[in-house]
Image (tube, rainbow, N blue to C red):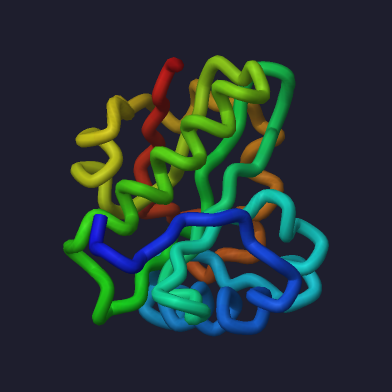
Length: 154
């Protein structure tokens, strides 16, 4: 991790910057866009990476069920990539899952190699409960999803 970069819980004041970051990547087809109201509602799910006071990256750990959570909205600003910031955010999510007693964490991504470095393995999307597909209807690629599913058993 880069000196001066801190991974922390998101604060309400971070929501607008988080939305800009997430929606920039959504515009590139990398993830689903998030409404500001949705980020406020789920603010407790989010971690951010800060360079001083500036949010430069974010992600969320969203609890899906008793034994399953999802890492979603992992976004690292272009100037901050390839510095271990995304890895630090994933580790924060996995640590939170352990603390909550959640044994499995999944993600849907177009970049599986990144998550495989963190102990995730590819699975068939159909192995995931139907509940996890609740947001898919908002995706412009629905129903022709090009993301792959990965899971990490803690």
